[in-house]
Image (cartoon, rainbow, N blue to C red):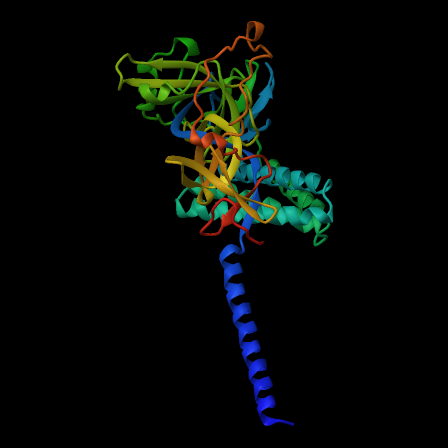
Length: 442
């Protein structure tokens, strides 16, 4: 065979292979310039709360109960229980000690907690264990936060909730059968302690229909009032500056005469303008985490722009195990907003024919599109966008008499051609160099 011919064939094969390789290489990089991998998440409806934190002072129609005799108190009604005229509140005994009373209270709280855990676990199945574990993790994060902020009261409340959830998890997963043996042992101990409370020197009865609470904090006189609608700004600020007095040795609790109770929130006139009398607000008591609906009963303000003000909220809910500490920090939801939630990092400002337009890039069918958004509020790394943007105004079907236009026609702006974000649009969360029409892959 001719060597020259073989040489030409070999040269052709090599050149062709190199050419094909170059074509593949160039083609790969050209396609790469037009395509890229992205991550995207769907657009959902969410609600953001706009809230403010204040110091709140608890006001109740209350009267201290004085036993008229000293000794060990054997309470015969639960803390916070509703009592009627003539109900026996407590026995005052010469026998026993305050340590016995404290242990009885501790036993009652433990038995109540264990019984509630058992009752809750009875309606749970093994599949609920995952949700319980998730709740325990959330409580652990909350506990770490409370400890780092030196919020001892909140940390103790969270720790108690964690203990209850751990016990419930143990029952649901079959690690223990329940607490019947423990409850019986505690009740037996209680009976033995009560037997030591001998020689009753005084029986204290209620002379009014009310709610009976064990705690006396020494502020009862300072925070006394007859009519909540007669309180003045000076009255409220005087309460906040008052000092407690030492309760008498034979004060055993207090009667709260009305199921309605109040919080007074000192603030300034500018802040009070965000609130409206008669409206309902969600109030979170930060120490214990209780969230209660409260009605704004009164707004008291001074006329000066920077003057004092106070908000008085009313509540008719008496939650179990609520701590009625006289002063507590509270977070009040001023307003709630609903719209589309998108990651704040996905928001872009794009020049569109000389106009800056705020929006996000979405992915549809492997192609990138730009969508306008109108941001209402930003919070925790997310933007809440108006879900009604771009919708025609509601005119109740009226479009003018005999076709007459109800509003003057306005000239279109360049951004009017850009559609608004819609529900379930796939918002691109991680990509660079995006533009309308770019081809991408996921």
